[in-house]
Length: 83
Image (cartoon, rainbow, N blue to C red; front, top):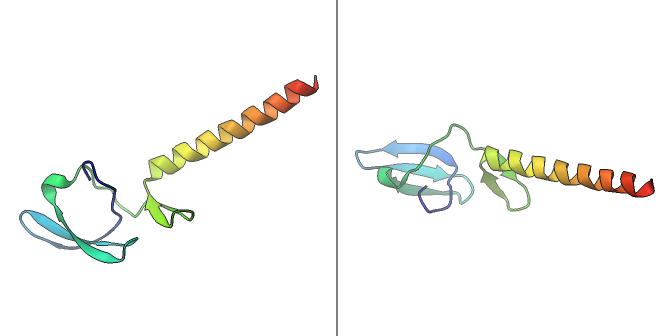
């Protein structure tokens, strides 16, 4: 969505100017105007168990890479400090 939070769900019904989307996180049906949509992706994306919401898979990959990089940096810092 342009300037709004992202929605994850199932397409219920379409019309000329909008469509109905069952939003799985909010458990309700939303009417979405086509002009408000920035991008549509297949699938629900990843699930964030902390926030209890679905997230964009790209954001999940970025978070995993950042955490892995931080852990590697800590291990290297400890290993270099022992020398």
